[in-house]
Length: 335
Ligand code: KG4
Ligand code: ZN
Image (cartoon, rainbow, N blue to C red; front, side, top):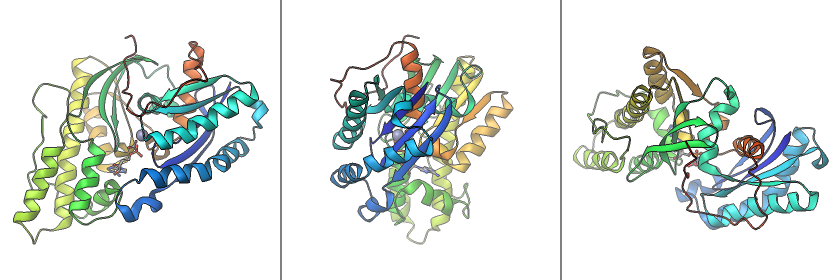
């Protein structure tokens, strides 16, 4: 079964064709990063206008790359939330329109749930589950336990900023560009991660929750007190603190829940230091680690089409009256 997926929840216009929830036939991603860079963040009005301009050509390109005419598509899926309302509307309406006109089933997909299962696109489902999965992006920091696709629960989440948001805000404090994650990572490579002892908030509190706003404030106070700091050392020390908390919690969850597989997804999971430390911890504890390639970690439509296949297998077709749900949470599957 071939599913056409569409994703426009934030600043990426993306369309993809995925066969049987696993084989990615195409995954076209048009990023608006350059458009929003001068503003230091995503401007919703600009984002939706850009989605509208690009959506048709991105979908056409996805079909062309997959060598599949619309007739060869079995179902159409789109993100319906969470995200920016005006951006979600563009992709959701485009996908509903195509599905309706072509007489195909339509599936609305939760963006966070798609991130959760995105590592399985690259690695296959059978050996992966149950798993402890960290979703760590600009908008979300969630630790979950999944026993089957659609069967998951939230173990913990951030009580304030998302991890990616902290990278973006700290980069701004340092006068670095947007988005902050890659900027901090590249400066950190030339810095000393032990130079400044920033707090590992909530690391040993026994919960699976996270907090990053204290870390961000510590960086702010440090910069005020130390005007002659080395940017590289601040980046490396901040990154180390953030990574230690993320890795510490996800590994502890896997051990405590006696789960053999750990996965991570979302933009922050691209971070090399994060991958290195998580990889080392998982190897030490003989845990299987599933990480998706970078283009499946950040926002993309392949993860939408991939999850839609599994939803359809269990009768998860959506009604055409489905509306955007900008603030929807992950939701809890029956575990
Ligand atoms: O998953 P994503 O593309 O979009 C959301 O759904 O939020 O994640 C974007 C976030 C941004 O905050 C960005 O700074 C962060 O992921 N990010 C990184 C890296 N690359 C992107 N954070 C740390 N290290 C990176 N290499
Ligand atoms: Zn995302």
